[in-house]
Length: 236
Image 1: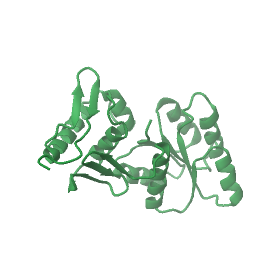
Image 2: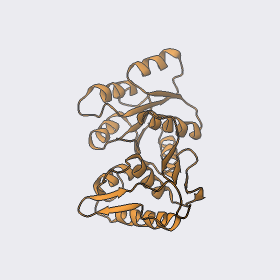
Image 3: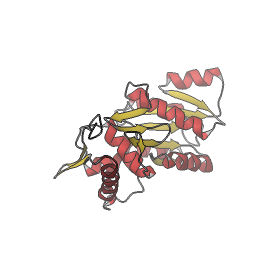
């Protein structure tokens, strides 16, 4: 499972919301918890793939939450954990990593660095080192938030970008509406809306206009699939 849904855990409400807003602007689905028990409740319900986890919380130590993610069968042990904390001693870093954290970021930090660390964790999960996803002439640059067809720019909204990224990370798979809603949208989204169908429709129209190809196929009764794109333009 490729990471596109993130849980931000921090008791500094303004900071947590700033982090969430920044990540949402990049197209990620983001939920927020301001204490340890709230984080664990969400982790038991939702399939988060990355957690940014403050160590100092009002009820639980972040290291204990990380330990539970790694050892408790109620949680997905493959969840990536980025510890975000003001504790900056070598002992703190070693302790956090020993509890199973994948990375460690010391406050204060730039939001751009946080975003880069998350992209690094996503690439690590796919055993890749390239921030660019490719499907024939279709290219998606996760770092620059840029999509193109045969080097011509395709202008997407942040949610269309996130949806296309999820399709490209699951190339050739049939993805149900429920799965897309679960991974590309956050918990604030009403599951009974037609937002998935509408967003898939607008993304498909933009890709078709750019490529003259029907890139997103509707599989009746099952969901949607991103087709293999040609590796050269028509007429070449």
